[in-house]
Amino acid sequence: MTLEQKVGQLFFLAFRQDTDGTPLWTYNDATDQVLRSVQPGGVCLFNENVHTVNQLRTFVQKMQGACSTPPFIGIDQEGGSVQRIRRTDAIPATNVPAMWQVGQTGDLTLAEQIGGVLGSELTVFGVNLDFAPVCDVFSNPKNTVIGHRAFSSDPQQVARFSTAVSAGIRKAGVIPVCKHFPGHGDTTGDTHVDYASVNKSLDELRQTELVPFRAQIQAGAEMVMVAHISLPQVNGDDTPASMSHRIVTGLLRQEMGFDGVIITDALDMGAVSAHYSAGEAAVRAIQAGVDMLLMPADPRAAYDAVLAAVRSGEIPEAQLNASVARILALKQKYGILSGKSLGDLSLLGSSAHQKVVNRVG
Image (cartoon, rainbow, N blue to C red; front, side, top):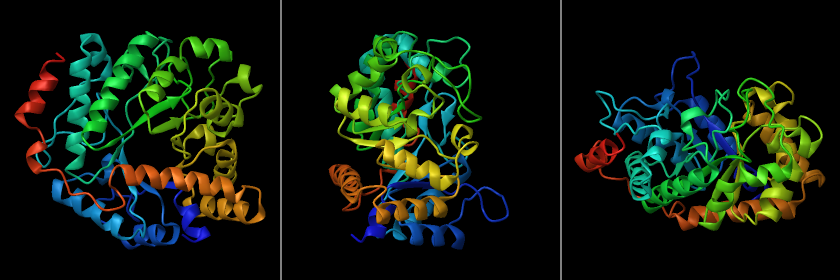
């Protein structure tokens, strides 16, 4: 790989609107131009990209065709309120209940089967990565961001159920992404808008927020998403966790021993975009120790900034190589580099899947 191609692997981009502001259902020249110039390591789909089964399959295939190294194709398919692909007249998908309801069943076998429903139906569209499960502990009743996206307010319950759902997604041949490290469940603010703080010490985080992530790492988690939450008792200021070397490298990599791929939450969210330029945010996150940058507000500016930082030595090339090695190893593990066949259409909304979700109640 050239240096430019290596830097491209660090980027996870999204294309949500056409040039006229309408939902982007059809692959267009603007999307093609960005993909071919950045050569990103991943692409994230949204509900704006979803119209029909064949439309989405074609859209994904064309994006893959523009990338010299096959990309991760990711989506937020958590169940409950966050399902980018829902059952419609054109897409007979299974609607999955909120993870809070799954946690209330007390049935870990059922939780793993729920993960299997999520993962297997994504394969129909060529999606190979699911930004799920949510590993946050719903510990603050004033939290408006996580709520019933979480499995429980009990960290041990979240640990057990999130690892079960991860196992089901993984068995379907899809990569689960554990989020939002180090835990977004005790915030009252919303990082989509601006800074949101968790006013806990590291010792307090270890007792609650970190419990599910520790369990996920022990169970073989391959990718972790770092949130933009501020941790003033840890960092001494409002620096987002995604840009904190103490959180990303010190806590997640070194203390907790995670050796997989670390990705930021979306960098176009207010907690980042209101305070940092796209280039500054991208460079700072890489310097903190992340491997992949999700949805920078200005992809080209962010790419150019990271490339310049590597060329100047501001980001060591050895660090870049280590990140790319982790990314490619994960793609190799899931057969992404060699190309994967699509899941059969019969998986969508199958009677077996409906029986699983019906058991949740």
